[in-house]
Image (cartoon, rainbow, N blue to C red; front, side, top):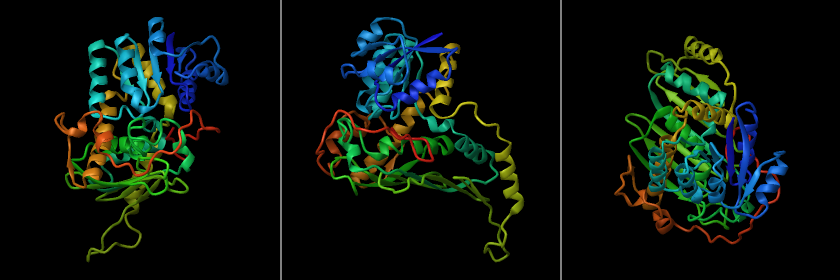
Length: 388
């Protein structure tokens, strides 16, 4: 029986606890930690957990020496310090997205995992969705042909009060705006399906949240060898209509699910009816996929529990988390400096270092409120799983 600790008992901690409770024969949550006095105890009671030891400091929780795995569900600026402490204490780690605000911190986390011999996984729960797994399988099959254009809409909506929470809305504590903390899901999926681009260009703005320093909208173009990907990152889109649309040479496939295969007339214009045979082949491939046994956080937690038991690489490791941060960093660098940024980013690049965004990023507005808690339930996505 694996012994689990939860570090940070805010809104997203419920998704972690629910995931562990799905595997009662394999693990038990035995400890919880939060810097706010009494919050860990209250959260455990709210989630129906009994016999959980509560702590206010991770050092005390780790010193008890009873943990096999911890979930770190704290603000992004704390991820590196807490992850490294757990790894050095001999405990495996599942850390929430985003991995950390800087590549320097990501590399320190990866190094700590390597030096300690422990496992490090970064939450990217959308890879454990049947719709996204189907889209990847179809793209990987080659039926749609070489990819030419991808449209990624990470469209969320948040009211201004969202940024009143104490750690949100500043470059220092949140690490960024919607590009880092919301679109990280779609950017990870883009990397998962297409690999890393060779260069990035982008623009950033704050269109509707006058109480936050950070961006609430960005548009980036990712350059591949012969393809382009457009990524819109937003918390200003009413209806939160998210999509990934992949256009290949032979067909378009997307989630929400749609398949279109055009076919040319002799003059090059599209023929009526397109290519129904290719559409049928793609639909048959998608229909033949076996559904995932567990989805979202539950799926990733199940994979991590298996990885801890078998001492294997988790499906999503520190390198995967780092690649997503590298892409976010390139988008920020391109938007701030108003130029194309080539990948990969090297350690000598100023944006590799912790603190550069805090120094160089625009303060679109001043943060005007800082409250310890916000009332109401957290909504994890709309029709799509996502934010915290």
